[in-house]
Image (cartoon, rainbow, N blue to C red; front, side, top):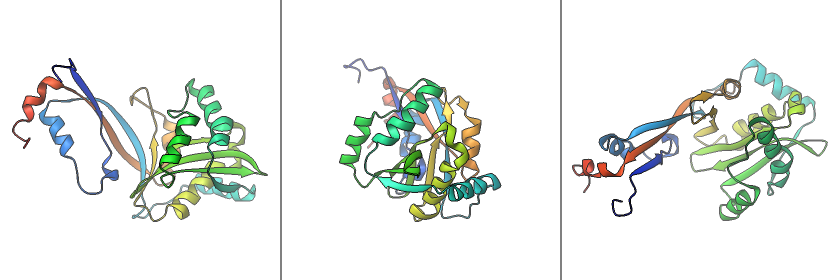
Amino acid sequence: MDENRIEKLQLKLTPSIYHQKPAEELNYALFLAEAQLIRRDSLSVIDLSQPHSLSKIRKRGIKNGINNGLVIKEVESFEEFWNEILVPNLVSKYRTNPVHSLEEITKLKVLFPQKIRQFNVYQNEVIVAGTTIFESEKVAHSQYISGKEDKNELGGLDFLFYQLISEVFKNKRFFDFGISNENQGRKLNDGLSYWKESFGASTIVQDFYEVKTANHNLLETVLI
């Protein structure tokens, strides 16, 4: 590191729910190396092995979805969701774009066909909501969630996530709604966090650290 003039490293830690076995050696090493916590995101997670309940307002939304004749489809293409819902919503609300472009998410799907899945909600064959799921052995993680702003009263997202949690991914250990943070973790989107918690989710954190490469000598007592 010294010869390449790399003075600092930044690390984004994997949340413990994704571990196949207890594995927090890196956390300990960062402590020894005097790393600094620079960001902390909050993730809303349901432990599907434990009882969890829906709030009255979510039950109402699910009922609306059923009464409005909504249909959930798992699709192979991301184009409809990206172009008609996700990108327009992110640009309108936050003046930003998804972390993955349409081309990038499509390529990832080719590389990991069983691990990246797209679920859309339709009314009369017109898309009204959707989510992109990254699936691992223990966790179903909702990478992107979005619905048409003028169609919220249909209950599309409530209906969709109820089906994903109670049917599609019911055999997973965890369902991860992802973060509800802005501004590098320092602002919590209260409305989004409440929506997730009303499905029975609770909070875990994902930490980001910065460590000086010159501190590698502090690890000599634990490195073999």
